Amino acid sequence: MKSICILGATGSIGVSTLDVVKRHSDLYRVVALTANTNIDVLYAQCLEFKPEYAVVVNAQKGAEFKAKLVGTVIADMTVLIGSEALVTVATLGHVDSVMAAIVGAAGLLSALAAAQAGKTVLLANKESLVMSGDIFMQAIKDSGAVLLPIDSEHNAIFQCMPASYTAGHDAPSARRILLTASGGPFRTTPIDELDKVTVAQAVAHPKWDMGRKISVDSATMMNKGLELIEACLLFNMQPEQIQVVIHPQSIIHSMVDYVDGSVLAQMGNPDMRIPIAHAMAWPDRFDSGVAPLDIFSVKQMDFEVADLHRFPCLRLAIEAITAGGIMPTVLNAANEIAVEAFLSENIRFIDIPMVIEQSMAKFTATKADTLEHILAADQQAREQAQQVIRGLIA
Image (cartoon, rainbow, N blue to C red; front, side, top):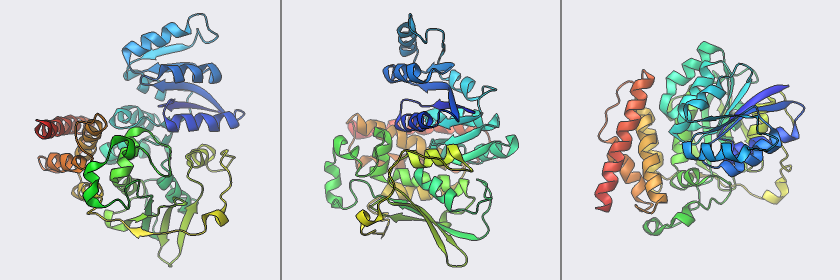
């Protein structure tokens, strides 16, 4: 039996992971669950799975969570509070696998710690790679950790690679990755109407059930830009070897083009339990709980070239990974601040790429050679983005 720590247990990936765990309770046991503020969901999860540890990052919510446990069957469970506790549970000696599912830069340190500790890292937090890049991949190699991608696209690419493939290494016979994208809710919306987009419209993804931040990223295509950066690192490819393909049906999750002219595609219903189950069972397979794909109901599949004019965030991501150094970190930080401002209705949807571009213009692509340098660039980029936003709402 393997033991698992789920970082970000109350989010959509965490919930789906626990659903897979429940289906295979003879193979997996939960050692630790973590949350930021959603203590009601965390409490229900702890009652059901009875982990040894629960982590609540928010101090006030952590105190409330502890109070909820008094007199219950899980009163003796160890509760840790604060962001440092994420690293503690991710590096526990008896944890085999770590599901890194905390959204945004907040998930970097714990995911990196799991990599440095030699765990099997189930990576759903793309920002960890976008920010720390080579440092993260070097930690995987130095520690002997196993890195398995959870994003549906990267998991699809991994499945289409040779059976012996290891993340971060060359796949000599693969010449190109075709990274699919649904196009989000505004794929066909006239560009001159995007200034009227509401928060409710932006978070209503047509195919996937995701959190608010990721849903906005999908609407702007920044999610695909971050995935392109991540793919460069996971599969050791240059940006020009990765083509984003709009595929609105979201049935093909990505493709690998080989030198002999073969193109391998991974298909399935749009349900995150598929990549989660693949990574948890790897190198074998087990039931994910997802219904089989009915190809007759699909009827047709469409493919379009990604329009960088419609989706300037994708262009900015390509520019960031091409420049290298700290620029992907700057891109990600500015995006997080801009999306937060949009969700708070302080800026318009179309202002998101403008905030990011103006923020990036203030930085040069210095080397991202230490974690301290990366975290400093992240903080500076956030401050710069906030300054741009203040100028927009003044």
